[in-house]
Image (cartoon, helix red, strand yellow):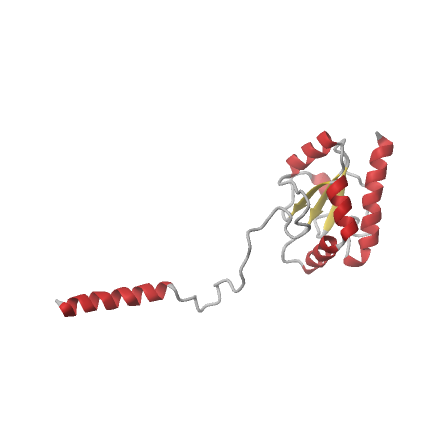
Length: 170
């Protein structure tokens, strides 16, 4: 009987120790990931909307322009722009006070948000009348709404333009 109990105990120990071993094929996560917030790293102190429809509603009801940021988590250009955007105090302050914010990793069904193609990172401004501001663009002719880290001053200027035109149009 003791031999039988020892056999069962040995089997239980072997089975339970195999549950704690990481996989050897590399599919195990190597880094700890925190639960993702709506900011996705673009500014954790800012208020972000969850959907495009919610953002449009909030822009209209608050009479603030909407800034839509299209990006991809694994795109090096998006990552570089995210880091610059999140660490710039002036942009973070203006974004938090004067804009409704939405960042998307997937395209929406509204084709007005991709007037010249689907590329990332892409910043689109929408005024409270729900009109996409096609006149507020970056410096590239082939990607009108693209910005790079070196274009931060232009993005800041365009944010001010979106605010200023908002006040003169209404």
